[in-house]
Length: 250
Image 1: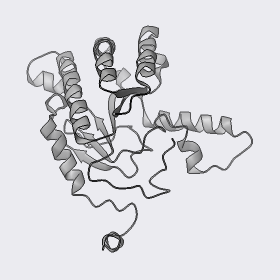
Image 2 (image 1 turned 60 degrees about the vertical axis):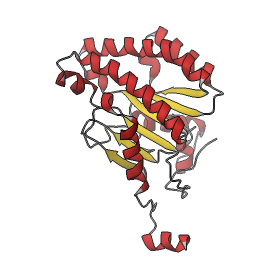
Image 3 (image 1 turned 45 degrees about the vertical axis):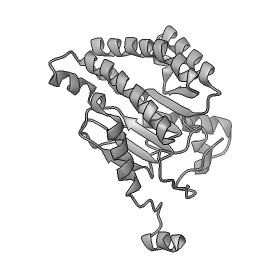
Image 4 (image 1 turned 135 degrees about the vertical axis):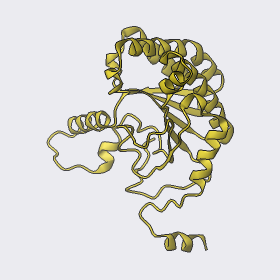
């Protein structure tokens, strides 16, 4: 199923967000604050992911998208990148069977060609194993960048329409790596920074943005509920006026 863009159609607004997207920031700073190596924060961050997944299921959220490793994160120290890759492998080994048993579908999106062959095979296997699960779709964005996503979608769109020079928005959207999911209703960034950092640039056009100083390893069920409560207090107009919304409700 290809979902329509919020700039071409007004989506339904539910009290509980259908799709939550998160930049899980602050792992390294969480560890440094405790005089621990940065990798300890990443390990703790995996535990926070597990709790967030469980909370999303309990609250009826259908899609959870997590920014795990950006295309710019290769600029980090080589040792940290290597540790992150090993942690990714370990997480797949430990969590996929549990996800499958709980009817959770796993998707991993991004330019996966830069990962070693073992990790690529593990990702492909995990996605095949969970492909038909329906309770919650968890998407991990790995070696992902919003501009990369738009560029790869543009290349595919042009290749699929030889000789055509004018395109509609929907023609590009169907080639984005997350065309299988509705646009995020709620975007959360932990760790105190207030920017999007090249994450889902196309998809976040009308998402509600929520920033918190909480480091990702400390992001709890209560933290998620606070973000959802903030979302519930927003007026989602999608270009319309408040009077129009009031008229529709009366």
